[in-house]
Image (cartoon, rainbow, N blue to C red; front, side, top):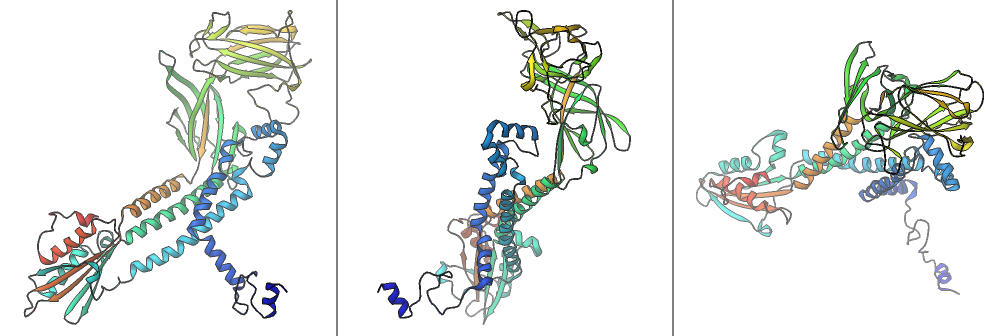
Length: 550
């Protein structure tokens, strides 16, 4: 027979059980006890720190990988480029991190942990602040007391001690003074002064502010909206979802609540230094408010335009040449401005023109490079020498085939989908190119039609952000900063005084005092000396009153 079987036979308790009790007949926790135990684990500060670290780690994929709410096209392309790995990332929520169940679980658990930890502490701290300080010890010999003789009666000595410990009454006295307790012990008087609750208050303020930050971030993610749009000179933008190039909003934001203002770009002023570095960008616009009132306004870098419901930031700018393209039958197949995106400091820009609506024949795609001030390089190529359009030229490559616009799949407006496109070749069998300047009309190769460069307006890229939680987030962040400063620089001290009438006379009082403070609190002894000096009617030993400020 084994040892374990022998123990069971004589009735010895089993040491390994679900409840982990060594005494067989002992009480069990039960489901309520297990709930209390679980709640204690959730509300421990150790778990809160672990969850805060996990939250930071969990947010990393949201800033590295494309996300569905921010850029659906880029996310779809990411899945296509990465095959099975992209599908796995999408399945586990890495492509919608902030809306995933696991990120929400971490967030809510951190919130519950902080609230469960802070609320009981706040209640206990409030009660402690309202409660009377602990009485002074009956003997101060353990605390290295100092002694003084005050040439005043006991009543006056008590009054001086109370005033020295707490110069001001009310809540103001709690900030720079002590909470005072006076006990009569026969003919003597014991006074206890306590300060330092402000440190605990700072600690609680920091954690409450952290909870407020979490609430503000959560509210912002649910109620905010943000959109980007490209506006060409002479055109108008309306604050509606259909007018945004990219648009994202919180889950509880109602697009119908968008303020119906309009913004017209009148002109873009740009200036550059001699070496080509930008010195100034200013978008002159006409803003029409929801009530129909129009007014001129300006948007500059780092100087957003305040509008109803948010702010408009100037994010970028460039050229948007206006073209008219006819097809092989001489019909106008395209007319409009096309933004070209700058690629370098001299505004060498690239863009595409998609012509799907041809009368007959294949669809046409043109991929072009805009050179604002064209020069010929040493190897015979073309380049731009200056960001302003002093001698602009566009060099196009021409493609024919299916642009893919009829598939119902969103496309990047600045790129051609080359899946079903074929480059048009010249007589030498090389990809055909054509160069065009403003005001010129050039024939497309192989009789595909003509292209006319009508004008060269500028465009701006704007970013509109509306987040009602920002003021609350700022206030909560400031509260956290103030709270941690208070908790770091505050100090907990207790000062005790024993006042005894002098032998044979009531005009002299013997004073014995001691202080209890952390070992690193070097100002505690100066504080005690200040109080003793006030009772005895002398100047403090260090000649100043700095200790009262510590």
